Image (cartoon, rainbow, N blue to C red; front, side):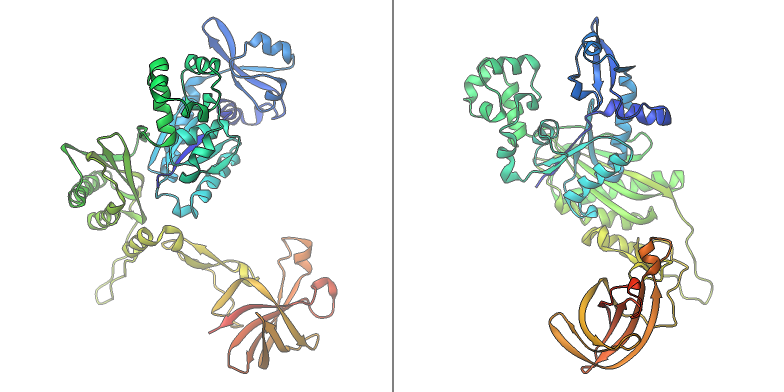
Length: 506
């Protein structure tokens, strides 16, 4: 299933201007508009969210806007700077989210995220990450994912939701009630259709296609077919100016997987040769297949560390060729390295020593097959609280120098959240006689403890007072558990005296 995202930035020129002004930018509650020339008229080209409730809108004459809001702040628009900043955002999105990103000027982007959402936990996670990162730089945005770009574009601008994922089965219902303006028709065509009483996409879809084309030309039917997925909508991905890129054009279109794999290896040879000339290695690779119907298929592969190993890169890309739909044939293949880094030093074994194992190739293969988010290492953190003393890091990240405390044993399996249990125990320093966990009662035959762990005083007042007393206990079956009591058993301020199971040994 194709997944196309329309990223709409409703106040992009104003948000960009605020970032440029920095501390000198007007407060967000100040009504702010940008002005430009439309022929001989001076009109509003962008309206801030604080100015919209005053009845101001894009295209309104400046004199009329000043009459409605005398305290309005007016600044000159800079369309060239807005377009340049939008292109930079597209290049950043291409490096981070998807190999296929196109400009949708003046205030949007198009991303084809088919097969690219798994590093973020799925489509919803990817869209949430986009919106959060834009919100961090005070940029308003809406991100809508749909099977077609026409539908995603319409819902992003006229749907009113900041984040939405449209299923193919619900595509028609999602866009049928949207106004005609969401179809990207010419203004005069939209006005003529409204005169006939047609206000929504669903009403236009119900009209006979022959009479619609006879009266209004082919544009309404083409936009309908694009929105409903009956007609492909070609676009040209943005290209970063500084990235290394190689391509192959074919006199006759190719479609066989074996042929695609053979030319993939040739492109890899060309790319690695260019990387060698500049002394760099690739961390991410994008292989695009341009079909004769103007559609673009793409493969993205990541590397655990910078590399220009031809065999390794070729294998990663060829393993995913089966996901490419060649359609009626591929006329051009483009391989680029959007993320490149200097090659790091590699440890070599001395004479008589074992060679240092190189696991980055294995990490790359597993990440390609299982997903990058499934591979990680465990690193120690500076915290005495057990669930905070470890963190996930990248599989090829530098090893941490921290160590866990060795005085007391730690369980082989630590629960992410301690589980509440029922116990019977003597206070304050005795282990439980028995406990009930997950509906089963277990009698304690051996115990060791307590190991007292205090809260992290610098986080909050409650943490400063909290106390945990941990016990290593063994039941009659020989199973060993890691339990703790919340509180010291004497002072109620240190905890509620509840018991928890936090881990299992062996």
